[in-house]
Image (cartoon, rainbow, N blue to C red; front, side, top):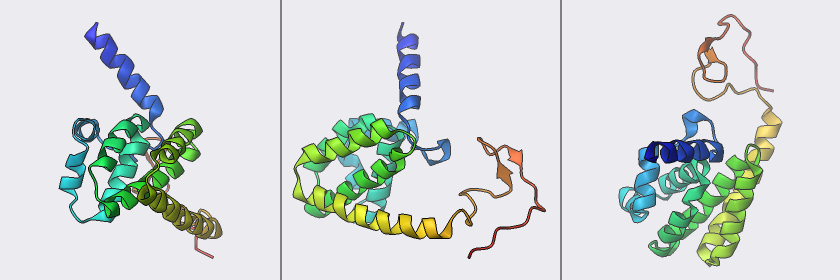
Length: 170
């Protein structure tokens, strides 16, 4: 019976993920964060950038960690809260195209928080993201995908054509 419950919960977690396998946080990291959200603040002392991107990865990997984010907010300083708000916005952006219902859940969660520092970080990250989106649209798909350019396919297991012409930026 316990094995069945574990299998069902892992299937549910797979459906909740907004990012590709290579961009996901490990289950151990997620479990550690859920059990002790403030441990993330202890690990990443005074490094707001790492806090922002690691938390965004946790949320995009499994949006059901949002209650732990609430606990993290209550244990954090005002500057950490602005980084948490930015992480929420980044995670929402990652989920928008693949899992719009998860993106909506993140946006609703952020609006319910009511913390001005979180809201400020969320808004500031949105302004940065919209500028980055405009730049990436200008560049098109000229940049190779993250990871090895010699591997392609869904799981990056097929060898790409090494003689294929390289796209040049405009």
